[in-house]
Length: 118
Image (cartoon, rainbow, N blue to C red; front, side):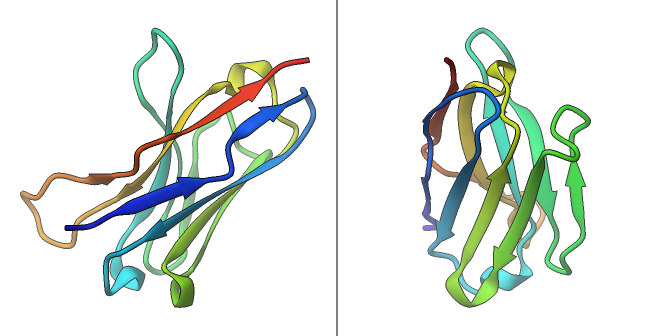
């Protein structure tokens, strides 16, 4: 059973920064595409950023140029560096791991709350 454990959320003022961390129990971690999603109250869960096993990245338009996703395969960890945070970034952020085999549901972490408020 794959476990994803997130940390790093909190309350930050607008313009501030946070770094989210997600550590996975799965091995080999390096082969998995990893992603961060978020869900704000009353809204659907949305993709924020994704990083492939080869290090290719994708960002949603709303976070492009402000957020950065990275991974450390030696630590089974993926990061989300969030800068210039805005109130609209407030959400629960979830770590996501795409399985290696088709037909298996994605793996999700428990979520970490990020609140941007003055």
